[in-house]
Length: 112
Length: 113
Image 1 (cartoon, one colour):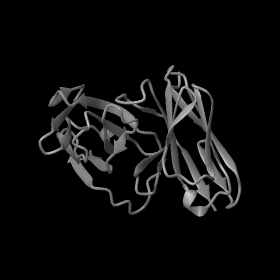
Image 2: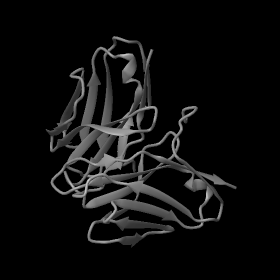
Image 3: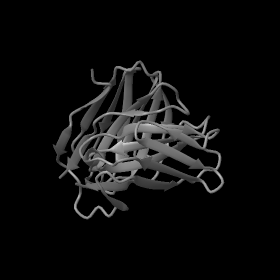
Image 4: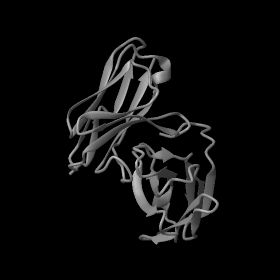
């Protein structure tokens, strides 16, 4: 289960509203970005990815926006549902580097 | 049906003991990873193997030794366990060594007493 007093940045959102989670990445050479969702007691789960030659990509109820000028990534979740309650991570990678660098997680709490 | 599996799910042990965590993927991926997630949920890579060859070895104490008997398996052996080793350890795999999506296992929660 979750640790008491985890103190992650937390977004509380009403069920049915839209959620926006932000991420600042560090490496201007990064050309591949992924959003992961981690539910309590589970491993990170792939949600959506985007390459640096795009600035927007849409999935089912999710949209990722990439602003390379300010090294900013965001994840938008439409019509947030209770099952969206989780910790969300952004990760960056650049081709030739074997590592995915993860950002700090953002906790999303959906209020029914 | 499971893509990336790990055993055990929970591991509670005394300081000084030696323990292993096993990981298997049935995705046909060439690359596998071990990550450590601390109490603040920060995910940090420890090791990566590509086709049984070590390609990433972060600054990890040499008490940690990964072993890849084949490209579908990557095990993690830890000697002389310390309190600070308590964390959740995740195995992951990807098709490529770079620029590819990594798929994670369910995690192993290690508690050292």
